Image 1 (tube, rainbow, N blue to C red):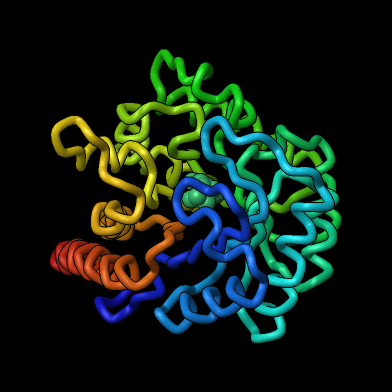
Image 2 (cartoon, rainbow, N blue to C red):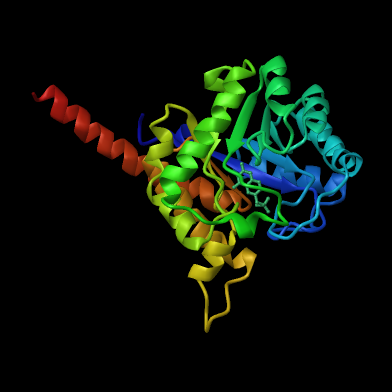
Length: 286
Ligand code: PMM
């Protein structure tokens, strides 16, 4: 890897086609606006776009399948026609099947295949990439399931079980991307622990994706007089996480503000490259 290798950690830009996402809800519900937003994120340097039609914020109620599909389908079709690399954020195999037909190359299942037992088989049949996140239940119950003995070990073990389910269904090992699922049944301390120990997930040999963008734990960190920072004021902290994760060598960061993370990833990648260069020098000097 060289210092000039900005692609070392990918930047995944979020296109939420929802009225109620905590981070950007309602902004891109019109398909034309969502497509324009995706185009803008690509121009800013996003390597791939994550299109979602169902909010997963704590307390959110599920949307019916036909509504989810109607939201994401025109956006996937429009962006795929422009050559964008697309993942779709869905927990439904039926939605995944249709968006794969429309040009999606990756399924981002925040439930890690737990919400829909058909998901592993579908992914195996289609041979696509899949993001397998750590998850303990839908938005209405997840905050009650945030208890851990050792959050890093517990999340690693539970994720391994989900990976096994995908492998047993016939998904290729190298198609599976791991995500510790920041904010999903996790309090702030748990999220910081998982970021701090991201190498535990990388040690599995799978690609690792981290989604810290605009999340509540960043708002809590940046509080003023006990009031958490609003989601859009969390972008600089998000970029800081992106730099740190790039320095550790994660495969991708999932963010709303792409421009900030593209620069941050270049910083982190340069730090990482410099460290590797010194290590290589040390080895040849032996
Ligand atoms: N976070 C959200 C939604 N989808 N997908 C993955 N793989 N990882 C995440 O951390 C994640 C996700 C939270 O909602 P948002 O779309 O408003 O950011």
